[in-house]
Image (cartoon, rainbow over all chains, first blue to last red; front, side, top):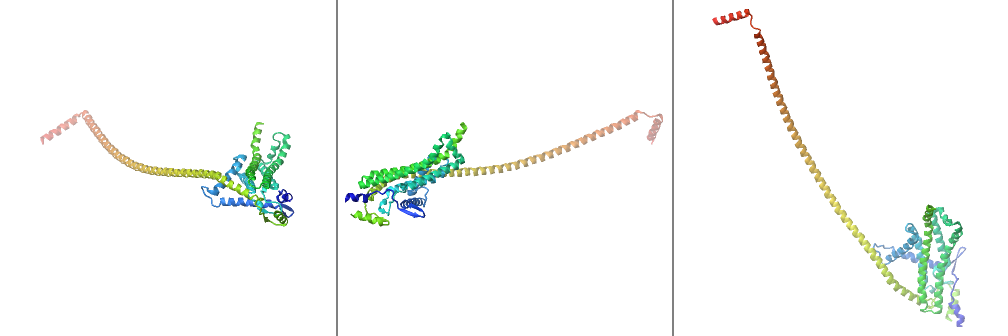
Length: 249
Length: 173
């Protein structure tokens, strides 16, 4: 009886979703709900932090300014001092959304709420979210490249040797692929590991894994935003190198 | 048994609460949250305090620098005003000096003109005198010469006789 009931009551649900029908589209409702919560948290936090601005920041304003400086640091390190300012909002939104998604997914007891199907979790544990983010990054770096260099951006593809052209083209596809799957895989795997541990030993034993999960979640947010900024910076940077090689060629 | 009932209930159901504390991982999450809160508070607290202190000192420094700059500005402005006043004073004095010098020089020139005029008049007078004397002398000399010439021509006998006759007539009267 116990053996028979165990899988039913404690099965981990993967690939089951709380579908919403929007026109012809079936969307994953649980992902959208948590995404909205994440967005709400970010908006409310920004609003609270900037409601009563002080010259000498204290309390929450100070914390949010610290976060902003951190984000600016990521953008500045990867894109360079000259162009980083216009990309801080994009890179920062990526970092904050992914970070808050991951941590809310790991820290909020979502399982308290039972959905008809699927379960609430970090939006980043759904591959659709991460692919959307990664495609945004692709658009962003193409936009940055074209804006900075015009059609000369394509010279990057044949810069070293024309034989490398296929590799460069492939890279444009592997970049979003690796970005999205790295994030999705890490977060989903972390949730699964925690879920499995909780199934096996409900108390105390999952704790190290959960803390490790928090750590990796933060690192994943950092990696995603750093790589995004680095791709953008790379797309814009080629200009200087091109001129450089022209001078010597 | 209870779980089975719950599970069957869920199959049909809409959104509901899951009352199973162990399955929802509530206790572990609370522990993690508490750990995170304490660890994060000490770490973040330190970082944020440092940040605040750095900003405060930067603002204080900037304020001090602004104050110093304002003081220096006021100082220089005072100096400027003083210099301006000194300038005005010097200019006024210079103008007064110039006026005075002008008057002195004009007065000196007038005196000189008078003196020169007087000297010229005097000279003219003396020259006139001299010329007059000279003329007079020349006239006298000419007259004398004429007289001498007249006498040098001598008297004719008739004349001498008439003269002597007249003189005798005079004597006899």
